[in-house]
Each structure stands twice: as structure tokens, then as C-alpha cells.
Length: 402
Image 1: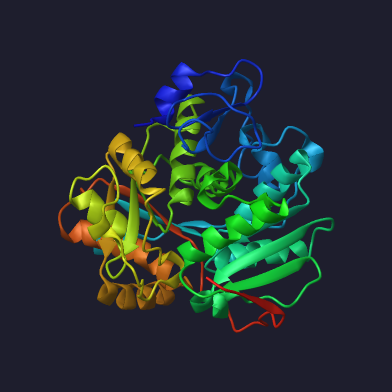
Image 2 (image 1 turned 45 degrees about the horizontal axis):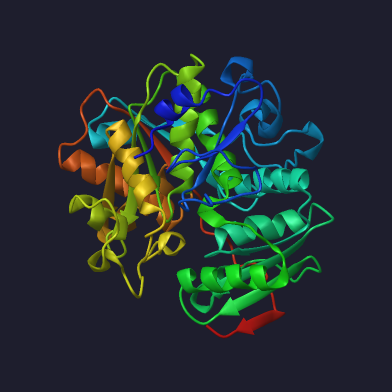
């Protein structure tokens, strides 16, 4: 079971970033998503004694503010898309409701496409420029594809192939663009991902990697580093709704890096939240399983929080489990009926959250009701996004057989 603190202790980079497997800890190159030996996720460690983290207001671009802990060797490759610098607000009314000392809301709906996934596109395009990648393939349930599609309208020189399950096609709110080819697959998100990866291999295109693209996790990490700087002290608990869990894993890594740099007093407990109608990770966690079993998998995911409807997280659950165990955190199921109420409550407090974001707070509420949070707890709630208005959808969609 990997632990970022132990990884940094055992593999302290001397003068350049080191890329290694979270499973077997073998070093590899920066083009790899998964370990050639054990298929584990590849992570990047930085020479922290050479790292400088600027204050929150030191540069308008998060990419430049946190460049020393991003996988981009040349500053000329940094590609900021206008995301970041989102507010992190103390909400005493929620603290009173949950019976804790404080609740801070990090509102990622303020990003350009109203989702935290804009941070994925900026970090990944910066990485791709350094690797010389110009044509790549990805799969998405909507938010990531929106972020990348938006980036294509801002950055020239790339060609993007987006694959999506037909049931999620309505969430592709972008107009046709010459740099984007959209492919709809009959079936689920997991099926679309498998077909997308084969398409990339067959055509010699770069596979974007999803959860296993370390630049995605590093981009999402910036949201957390911002929040750690914005809060008056370290949170005791961090909550985020999860599908694969890459954002929460990035937040965990960022906390370890900030702690080792002396910029965060203590490490929070990290809590991943799923909706109870589709909570395979929570099912495995509650059963004490190290891996997803057949009885955990949800064949036909359904629920309010469409952005996190991943019925088979077999490949990513072990990382979420390790994160929760290492930090004293948990994996929790938000009740669907609570999510209705929480979404309205957030709206009354000035936060236009989508149901996935509402699930995050609903999960914290459930833990509070069950006595798992103490009165001196300080919570950081990551609202990953908002409902998007009805925008154009691509008309030139290529149908792909599953």
C-alpha cells in the first residue's frame, strides 16, 4: 500500500522530478501512464528542497505560482486557461448545522466551464507540449471533455478525440470545432474508455490516460493547495465527491508536499463521497476489501450525480483505499434524499452546486449525524462544479459500435 510520505522519504529527488510507480516503486519515464512491470499508477516526486511555493496572491496564474510542483520542465510550456483562484469561504451556518468548529467551501464552479476539471486541461496540455504530443484521445462523462473542448478553442496546434457513452452525450455542451472529433459509444463510461484506448492504439495517437494521467491529478492538486493557503489553519478533514478519485488523490499528495515544505501544520483526513445509488468503492470499503469484488460493481449506474456515476472503479479503488487508511479518512455514501436538500441549502447560501458537489456536503452531513466528526473539526468541502446552462452540443458526432 503506497504512502506519499514514505515515497518522499524513500525516493527524495536530488535535482529533478522523479517518475515512479505507486505500486512497485520502480522509476520510469515521463511519457508513461502505468508501470510496465505491475500496471500501477505513475506518480511524480519533486526535489522539495528546491521548491518555492508563492503566496496565494503572488501570481494570477496558478500554473506559475505552483510551477515547482507541476510536471512541466520548461516554463514556456505552461498553458493557463484562466482557471483557478476560486474562493474558499468560511460558512458558519454549515458549521453550526454539522456541529463542527468550521466549514470552508472551495467553490470550483467559478472556473471557466463551471468545473474543477478546467485544471486538468491546463496541466495536461502543459505536459503534452513538453512531450511533443499534438493529437490525443480521451473518454469522459462530460466535465473533463468540456474542459478540454474549451481549451481547444483557446490553444492552437492540438487535435482532440473525445469518446463518450451515449447516455452521457447530452452533457457534451460545446459547439463543433475543427480541433475536436466526438465519438459516441453505445454503453457505459467504462466501455467508452476501453474503446477510446483501443482507438488511440490502433491509430498511433496518444492516450490521455484519465485517472492514470498524472498531470490530471497534479492539475487538480492546485485547487487544494489554493485552499490550504486560503484557510487560516490546516483542515482536519477534506471531503470531495469521487468517481475515479483522482482529484482527492491529488489533494492528498499536495497536502503531503505542503506539510514537508512546512507550509501545512498537519495532514487532514481525506474522505471520498459517492452517491448511495452508485457507491462501489464505499461497498468495498465497508466490507473491508482491498480490491473491488463482483458484488460491489454497479452494472447500470443511476442517480442524481451523473458526473460520478462510475459503476466499476476496479482500477482506482486501491488508491482511494490507501489514501483513506493513510490519513484516517473514509469512503462514505451520501443519501440521495439528502442530496436534494443539500443542493437547495447550498443555493440558499450562494453556492450553485451540481448534484455531485452536493453529494460531497451530504456525505459530510452523514458523518456528522453518525458521530464521526468532533466538535473541534475543521472541514474543507470541495464543490467540484455547478449545473451548466443549456449550451450548444456537437452535431457532428461519430457513432461507434460497443
